[in-house]
Length: 198
Image (cartoon, rainbow, N blue to C red; front, side):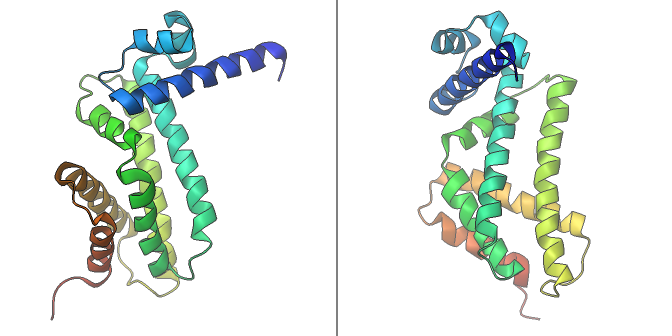
């Protein structure tokens, strides 16, 4: 990387770091480009050069956060002896890392209030969701391959697992229940065993 490329990368990182702090403090909607300009000392044109739009900047941060999450999981996931333990570990990481993270709240706000998004933004959101579903599929397929889970349509199960997780996180943020981990563990147990006595 030459000096000019390094300077460009440093500027990009500075903008992203400052914007992340603002999004976490104020939320997505309440953070303006002008505030990002002020926090970074970069011009609006420079921000748009690196990220194209406020949405593009926010999605870049989400993609980076997902990569960090995956790296954390790769390190942690090795500690589980089987797929059942991995599902419970997955729930634990979701509660400890994501549930009350300020960035999660900003992401919910972004997804729930972003009408009229561009095709590019929509494609990037779709890709983020696809990556999460693929993660779920790998986790569930491993359990099927090892005989821990019954064989089912893994794509359907991945969607059900993601819906369960997203729904729980939204309900917990709204209701402010104290024992989130216990609720997630119960959800995993119900997914694994069902609730029928027959």
